[in-house]
Image (tube, rainbow, N blue to C red):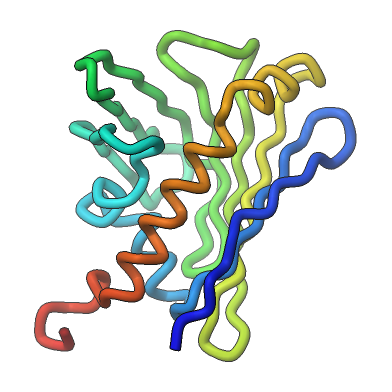
Length: 168
C-alpha cells in the first residue's frame, strides 16, 4: 500500500530553502532516479507539458552537468553546474546556474537521502547568494514545479520503472 506524501518547503536563515519529501521506495532506487539520465528525463520536468531534451549528468566531483527543458510553447530553459560532492547513495552537492539568470548569482544545491523502513526521506537544500535571490525563487512558482516533478517521481517509483527489466 502506498502512502501519499507531499512536498514540504521551509526557509532556513536568510538564504536557504529546504524541501523534504518522503518516497515509498528504497534509497538506492531514489538515488538512481536522481543520477541516471534516462530516469531524470521521465520525472524532472516541472509543470505539465514540459520535456527535458538535454540531460547530461556526471558522477564525478569537479565535473559539469547540464539540463535543458522545453516548454509546451517550444521555449527552452537551460541550467547547469559543477558537482562538488558525490557520495552514493546518500548525498550529492552541486552548483546551479541558469543560462538566462532569473535570480542573481548561483545556488548551491544539496540532495540528501535517508532510508527508514524501506522509505526514502529526501532533503533538498538550496542556498542562494543573498536573501533577495532566495526570495525571488520563492515568488517564482518554483514550489509548484518541484511538487509536480516529485509527484511524477513517486508515480514512477510506485510503478517500478527504476527496476531492471528482469525484475519488473
